[in-house]
Image (cartoon, rainbow, N blue to C red):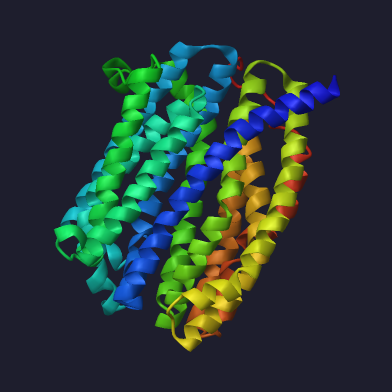
Length: 450
């Protein structure tokens, strides 16, 4: 009987993780293609776009916190078989995301210079980022809409379709990058602005694909009544379990953005090396994020169906998977350093910084794997979101940001500053594991009184 459970778990997890990993992987290829192509223009162009990427990163924090919160409830409602409530969640996610989408679109379109100055004070990077942000502002609208539709599709069993949409977005983006950056096939040679135009067109295409999948494969619709007349019980339940998660994502994300701000004010070689190191970290973290996202659905389904013992068993298995995958991925990140340095066009000093950064990735990725699966996956599946909010906020804002800023102000060596700024995932592991063993996350939040 135990073997049957294991087989069921493996099949369900693999059916979620493989498509999600592929989806994360192909998305990670976008900044890589941008970096490779823009390096042909200049390292400054590549760094300008890398710094500009902090804007959609912050936007995604807002939208992801909303959609992930919706996913927490949708997974348990799907396990219970309550499709009406899932459609209400769909509308509520859109209602919460709409004003955020409008703000990001309008500010990057109208005042891009003020936006990019948040992340760097180097004029060479600001000059390149302004046209990129203005042109990329349209992509933020499409990205927001696509994230909402993808959340719905994933939670009702259409993970593969989301992966298809992602693959189309990425390869279209790569192709259009080449076309518009270098002016191929008679297109104008647009440089940095060409990369932004490619991103907008590909994200728009991805949204249309998700919309078509939703209309063809599901009965869920974005109804007017669910957007502007939100069910009171749903709103209370959504707020109770997702508000801490939302605040966690935002405060952690702004802390992460502050790290970029600090690094962006160090010497240019550090900023350029960090641009490449960030891409590598995100690339090897694709599996971690996929397991975390799959954990919410797998465990949430069991909790919603009141199979609490089975959810606990699955949690223990996922925790072990997180440790093993973190060790393997950390080694891969560090071992990739000679190959990465061979293919980047950086100064000798920047290459030296990049080598050290990639070696530091070995412990950072281990922490990211464990914490993302436990905090972002298992704890969230059971509505245990307050711990993650407190843990991440204290780690980032009581230690990493202030000590990193102090090290910068005291003019400590750049790699010492970088080391401090990359300790967040490691120092919180003991507290996270202790909390996991308390099993407060083993809870059916759908049947619980709000």
